[in-house]
Image (cartoon, rainbow, N blue to C red):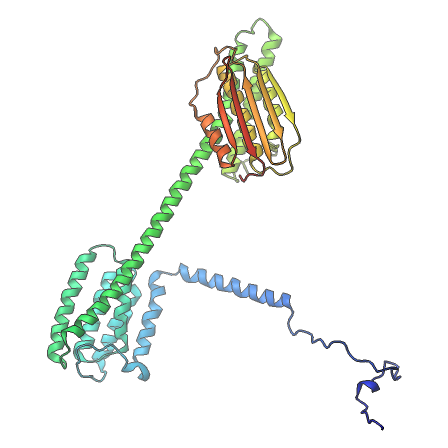
Length: 441
């Protein structure tokens, strides 16, 4: 049996040289269509549309509130003249319909245009719209613009600030008078129907009042958060200033006091005065770094004499801190175990502050006493221990406020660590801190 195959069948496909392929023939494995627009181009278009929408939104919200509230009133104004909506207005009292005339145009304008000032002057807006609504119902126009009554009630309930109860009482009296007038002119609706409509108007006012209460609660919450944030920032700044200033000033006072007794030894006097100068320079440097944190633009473009001094990691400066304390006359033994990890977050700064405050207290209250500083770096934590034997002199002590140790405890607790400070047998004092590494700043 012979089988007829057309020339367009796969068995008759040929290669570029025009030769027939052998075997069962060559079949395409997959047919892929090239996309009309690639993904990168679509993403670019989407990004431009989002940017345009944000810019337009920013322009819209920068407009005056009257300009932003006007379009809704214009929409009701236009809808009131459309034949399909002309007879779809609010009807209470059963007054017979009346054809629109010049007075109807005035009524429509009175009901719609005041919506533009419903947030700027809510009482005036509600008074004008209510007057237009009353005339609309009494004359039997029943325009589509009468739906503005519910909108203006919600807006006034939300934005009216003063004399709210008096305003509600006045509106109630006006509604009773309108109900009496409609009862005489209309087909005579029952008291239940008038009461139901009044409750609907009251529901609109209540919705606006709920929006006002929610807005005020949110404003109070934001204000409270702002106050708490400001107080927390002030506390943090006070701690930083205490840590930076107290240590350096204490060291300078101790060094200056010691210099008074070195007038007979010029070389030692010069060393002591040099130490005071170096300590003052370090205090200025630390204060500059603190100001840079508070204000990144501080010190820029002021014609300084050079580039700002780079700040080294806090734990790496502990040895410098120990040397400074030694030059102030305090014998300090320093031991550092392990290597600090690459990323410790704010843990290294807290460890530095613990050593700084402990050495400051040693200079104040146990000047000349043997002091030991031990810093241990673990994989997950930094351990600091500073001990003083308490056998020195307090002649050069500087009065303190007790804020330093309390601030250290707060810092360590914030990172989830442990802090302890207290006297030991023999009159000494020990400060210990375990600080988890990688804590957030």
